[in-house]
Length: 149
Image 1 (cartoon, rainbow, N blue to C red):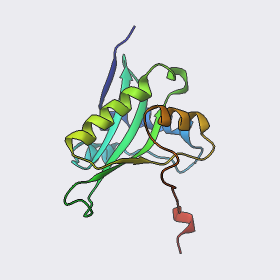
Image 2: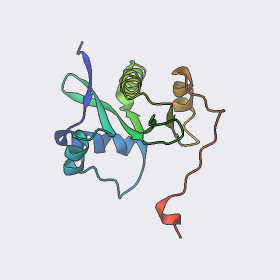
Image 3: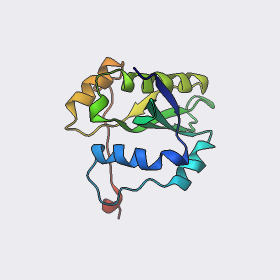
């Protein structure tokens, strides 16, 4: 069995991440830029993680640290675009991604981690709750670009 490895994504992961995102959303505009991944690889505030088993990228998540002024200089974190390849689900890969996310947030002294999930993804909601996220303490709102005034 291949060992699972969580690491920061690089420009070489663009095609694999794009393939994963296609399992997450159906949108013809979906495009993962190797150049943008290379830029994010050097960022202090944005981390694209990949889960790799053997030589196969089988999961990914985006972590963004947001500056806040409410608690001095303590940031908060937002997690987006979490996906594990359908063929690799229920093997602990998502939990491993979130362990790395939490470790990163602890090192950054984040006050909280927030995420949004599509309303119909009930299995994902159960997974997030098993990890300790609350789906009832806050309510998320989204306004997409096509709706901007």
